[in-house]
Image (cartoon, rainbow, N blue to C red):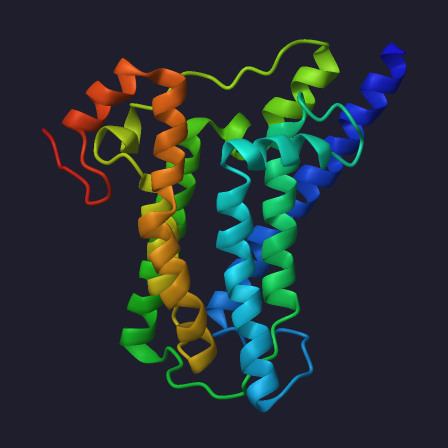
Length: 244
């Protein structure tokens, strides 16, 4: 029985981190090219409608899985069983598959409004790279084991309960409560190549970055109670507070 747990944990590790790496790479490349590399073959109105569905499915499903009901559903989605232990890994795997679906099934318009060139282009690429650095720093400060899905399969491998770590309050989380969503929004808006495809993606996902964290904060309130109440009182929601 123990050997089965080890095999399933390692299989989940491969699935989760493999999908996560592919999703991040696909997202970076898609944004850098103005979403012109998607493999969807639709055109015209059909393409616009299908692309809009791809845009909406990510925030809607992602937010639902953060709710109490979504958490119960999440425990039943584990591809290798052990739903309760692997819930965090399954959440990351599901989100990664959603991103892969969005960018690979996208039907490009073929229209590019702006392509980075010269000194302005170099500045745009620098800002884009900086936004990715900020996003990765926020993920690190939040606890990379939970953000990458490692906490779930690692707990199964050791036969222990999942360690979600403490509520993040240090690093970028000392400046604002939602640096991950802030970094995600900056990655979208600093994309160097602009097109109607990118605008269709950026507008709804920016709204998600502003409103989606409310569900996460409700979850933190249930989990941490007075500690989160005090944290919320002293740290701003999205716009960072620069301290000495």
